Length: 266
Ligand code: PGA
Image (tube, rainbow, N blue to C red; front, side, top):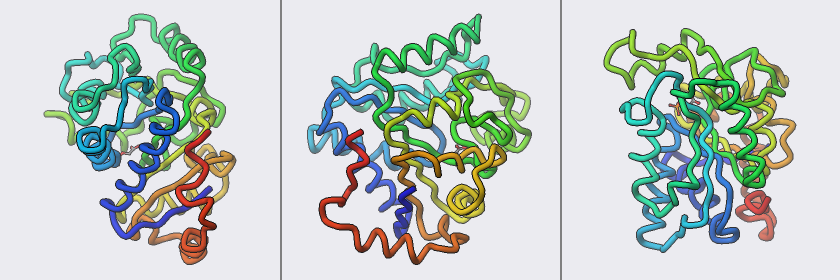
């Protein structure tokens, strides 16, 4: 796992966007796994700026989102469909027929999940999966105790995650208890995984992911087994890492051919 510590969210998001830009410019038909939540918003702003000012072209890009709430229609303001439209898709030239987000209103959820996996395979698999991390170490909505080999499926959220998500809904009763999420095994098949985490509140989860044991109790820890996982965090999120100085040293002394890493090239 490559751990890149940036001074703050702004520089971390800018670096993440540069990595995605490089991938899209190198491989215009890249397949991107995308994430929602507060973490990737600044990165998406940067991609929009690159599209507007630098001509970054999304016309051949295919996207697959990690997750969606069960029971929420695409137009619901708290749905991840809505989030992605607001924060990225409506501002860049990605083709609607190349956007994939789990359908929270699917009648037959297991069949839908199977088809979502099949669509990822047909697209050739994800070149890069963007990830955030939950306070409990979840990736996607794979809560602690999720199988590290899991595939896209329905999950029941923990009470803490439901509480954390309440801020996006007008009342606690409205917050869905279930989601459709890519599995840990699905995420692990992306050729590159790029996880972003900012703020002191994420420090414990980051330390468990990077320096703790690989365990289903911290699903993000499985990224230790991923051949090309890059973690971009700010100083606050790095606060509990025992080997932070070493990660800084590795990044500062990267041979020039490794700058920006080969990890975007799949
Ligand atoms: P956040 O959520 O980006 O809103 O902190 C991350 C997550 O729960 O995966």
